[in-house]
Image (cartoon, rainbow, N blue to C red):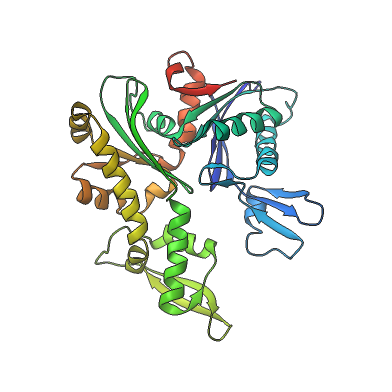
Length: 335
């Protein structure tokens, strides 16, 4: 079967590729390893992620997207070329139509950079769609209905909060506070409390394995290894889920304040819909344990974690690809 359409959830942390009638075929880190002496790309995706924190001086690992938008155009183009070719396999002569996700707060210049990079990487037509629209579709929310639906999509680089009605975004907030900031908060907490330096992968693994948005009675423990800053030697340390919750307090406060701001800007009729239907958490960082409980406590609105939350945006690209006419008002731009 010829692949003529691709959906790409181009995330700060991970890139997911969706093919209609096949589903998700690629899910790899948005990481590129580059040789510093000749600027040659050495590895992309999983292979590059394995190198993070372990490279010699002549090799550097990059995350070419910062806060959901392109920070390094050349490396992003190489990344897209890799994922498009991997999706097409032996059919590299085909130029597919592509839908790519983008944050709500993206500028026209940033949007143009995504379109140009994708076309130079081998795409035919490129459609850019805002992440909350895709996340809502992937969570099976009927976005074209005349009623209010609220989505909180928390990825690696951004938290996208939006109220959607009649296929468009009525109120939104796009803040550059999400999974990466959570990892940094854990790293800072361990350094201040224990005088131990840990890497971002260690912090992320601790968050995923035992992380909680609130303190809990039955706290889980997790062993980490870092560098003792006073002695300069490796040291093992057991941390618990309540310490992760304490580390994340300020980051989660920012996300909750953004949610409150969106609710305050939403017309009363749509707020009534949201109170009845609840809001939906999507994105990898939306899977943080008890985050739904914390948001409900802070806002009074029921919160539900969407099924397959990590892949809602990618699934949303597939739904639009198969129904372009139905969702054309949701397309941000195309060329």
